Length: 305
Image 1 (cartoon, helix red, strand yellow):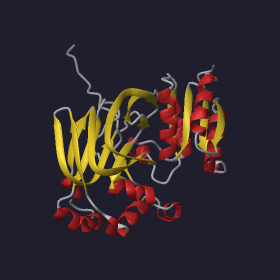
Image 2: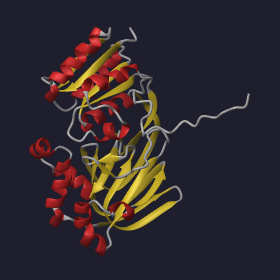
Image 3: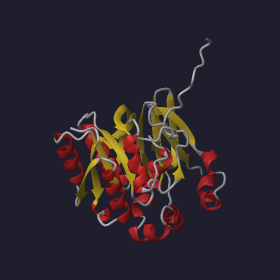
Image 4: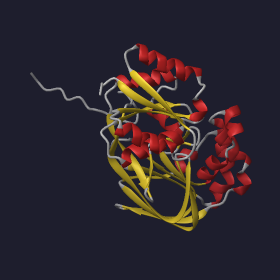
């Protein structure tokens, strides 16, 4: 199969997106054999990935939001394939793509086909994979309850708006977290477990996360009463909240909570009161910009002549 052959798996809502159509045609004029398949219902992304790999495709493009990217990444990782993934971010938040520096314009995103793919990590919990981040507690409820209509009007700001208007529902839960040389327990408001850096429409929860270090970044927002009382004003003012997080970087972490914890995996909800999160190092090859902030810096060493 030609090296310049790729398959775009496109979310069905984007079928009439003129920018996507123009980008596909542009790549075809550059000599790429670029096929397109659409998702319609749950399970389609996984099925289409399997069909693409069986047909010998070595480059798969994920066209959609964070949930679509996660579904395709999970399907590719399940096949342990050498095929590589290109991201065409078309959602509301596009949290992983924004943090990774992937262009939001479809034609520029497709230009990453020409960039050498890098092996990146994935996160895993309960047999499910996430590309970007698992959020728990208040943050996951906000993401899960943000309406599609509000997203259309406000974009990523819809998540923050929803959080502020639902503030009366805020409550903390007791939790215990432990991992290698790490132990924390107490009441928590929110939890971020990041392969990527941001979630919920641009909320930077794991600002130092890297996708190729074999580790997950853990961010815990504790809930002493004074934090609960002032969090709304901090969110509104955009000041001071970052200093309240407890952070760690671990290959795995186990979480026990006093009540069911609502978790959001790149848009996919799950619940549990005893969960183990782990990093799967170098689980997937992805075409990211060479200067992507999510890639470990390469230190140049100057040798004397």
